[in-house]
Image 1 (cartoon, each protein chain N blue to C red):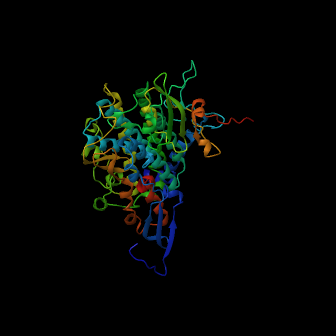
Image 2 (image 1 turned 90 degrees about the vertical axis):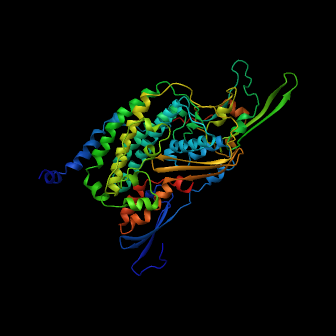
Image 3 (image 1 turned 45 degrees about the vertical axis):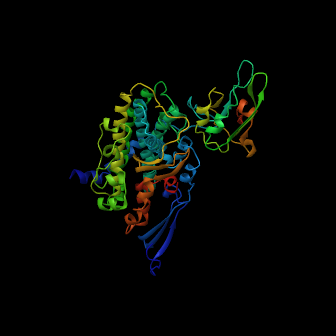
Length: 151
Length: 369
């Protein structure tokens, strides 16, 4: 009897509608208004790569050990260096990072012994050309410059 | 299709690969008699990337990010299966702390996977509302992943021998807060769907696959459990310390689409239960066992299967003693479960095909690999 009454009075449907109604309040809005408000990504976010420089003298931290290139599953990092006869160390000449093939797995970052290569919180990496996605040393040190649109 | 000819009253309908309800790029060729389905043929391979072949050209550590891209909805589970298989190959066990964290993350991933399934499945049936709510809750899980390992979807959270990242401050608090917040949300979905007459009429008695057939096809996961078989690899052959956690295996008897829905809803609750126990007792200690940087496993083979959200996910790795695996074979639950589609849809209506594909919870990235 009660079941029949419930069926006639559409209790099951009204119950569902009540859930929808409860969620109408604007505080339940979750949509990000993306270009206007950029999300704050996590501290460990694996985004655009960056080659860190020493802030005091502007020299690169990279010691050209090539470990990141060896760790990369996609072989997209190319490091070249010349041997410095005075310091008996290798000086970094070029560092190329192909972001078009990168899957941001973080293995290069883990491999780096001096925290020179790092995946940063920048996530806007789009480019109009394929060449623009292959980052050279300068680009890696400065980071991406996403276009900011204003009204 | 066993018969290549058509009766004069039969019609062949091509569904997919762009059909939104096939959950990816599955193409199903339906043989119809009016609204009734007389046979199906699945065409797969549109998302084939040759992941198993890629493995043969990568070292063991390098291949780990690729497994995330098979079942991208449950990337953490994929990663767990792979690292466990390699760990068995080199005879290393992860540290207790790493194991606890692994359990937490995989169970959270199970919740995320089931949430996406629930939202899209309900959307296929015609209930749009749950999708918005489930994606909202899934977002919270993904935020925990992002905070922990820096990526939301293709996480690459685990490494061979343990973990790469130490827990961040407030991890336990965040996970506990999620658990407390999430349980009422599951009740909310149930309010929306469980008693809804449209939902019940669309699902009850649709796509029945009984226990004997499940075993015949090798179907695992919630589909098997909805047919009354309490088979869960977390209980049957515990890995990662699952034997230390208390949880139930939800089962149902009718083996129809509605029962699979009920089983998955209950699984989400059980996952929360496991997460609560695990997060309350994360042991201290190192997060990574000693593993050689240049990994050369001894000649041999290993098969490890885990209970992924979709069923039994197995990794079979053959090592020939070099840096790269000789062969990696994945047993994807989605592919095996999809084999049962033909039997489930025979005699059903066209509209039910969508429901049945949805209830199998397939991910094409995993089927095609």
